[in-house]
Image 1 (cartoon, protein in one colour):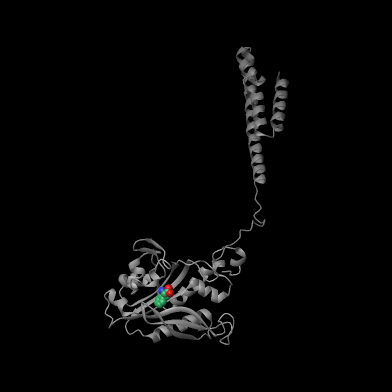
Image 2 (cartoon, rainbow, N blue to C red):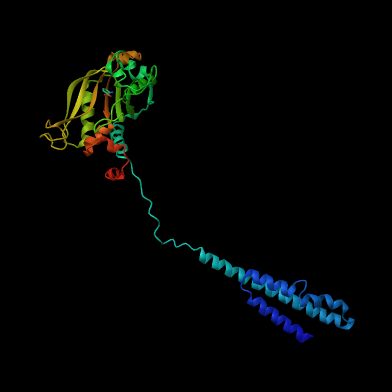
Amino acid sequence: MADDLEQLLRDARERIQGASLRAALEEARVAILGRNAELTQRLRGIAQLPADQRGAIGKRLNEVRLQIEAAIAEREQQVAARELAEQLERDRIDVTLPGAVVPRGGLHVLTQTRRQIEDIFIGLGYQIAEGPEIELEYNNFTALNIPDGHPAKGETDTLWIAPGVCLRTHTSPVQARTLRAQEPPIYVIVPGRVYRRDTPDATHSPIFHQVEGLVVDRGITLADLKGTLAYFARSLFGADRETRFRTSFFPFTEPSVEVDVSCFLCAGDGCGVCKQSGWIEILGAGQVDPNVLAMVGLDTDEWQGFAFGMGIERIAFLKHGFPDLRLLYDNDLRFLEQFPA
Ligand code: PHE
């Protein structure tokens, strides 16, 4: 009987040791300690034993049961630890492996150009102002001294949305908005998208971008405009650039000028880009017409101003010399990647 029990304990230990998975260990536990297991039957049979054997056998049976339970608990820990280790090994990530290369985007050449222009004027103390692309006829034209019947207002140039409402044809309406919103002195630049009824070709796009400048202060003269734009042209196109003013006309500036910069490709000798003239037109400008200031109630004896407006596409085009404006809108990476930012 005692030998029997020792054998049972040995067998049980062997089986427990042999179980290397949690499921197998659970099976072993049921087989050794379960309701129908031999040990359980024997424990149950204690009551039927003769009274003088009951104590010793019962004690031994219970010791065996406790030893088996302890063996199972110990084995359970080993199995759990091994399973965890295996799982960790399976899930291990080699952080030293090279990752999948994520292609990095860059700033569009138009954005780069806009920021370069903005930075030059921000460096001079200008602030950035913005206005809506859907604009009142009043701001786009009337407040800028553009009379009814002016050709720019016609169906051919302007995209009308409703009577009295259009897609702005230039950033100049933000001049009118700023003059109403701020007290002078005013030093602002206005980047933005503008719309014209143009058929796209190598040099035209019905949607393009401008940067407007507006200064209103005491004692502003054309010399301030010239100095500012000369500084701007040198900052953007190179330290040797000269600027020249040609007389022109805009309803909202008087006098009005078109501004040329000496050709940065041939340095004035004449080439294809400057059409042999040595000069390249970069923007329109002028002194703010006193009518525009008077319309917002400013005393034109006290306040004078200048304004200028340039096309960002044109500036980018001149700086980089690509052959067709439409390349800017095609999102062809072979083009865009030539302007890493
Ligand atoms: N708004 C004019 C244009 O689109 C440019 C301009 C702006 C001219 C400010 C003079 C002053 O052509």
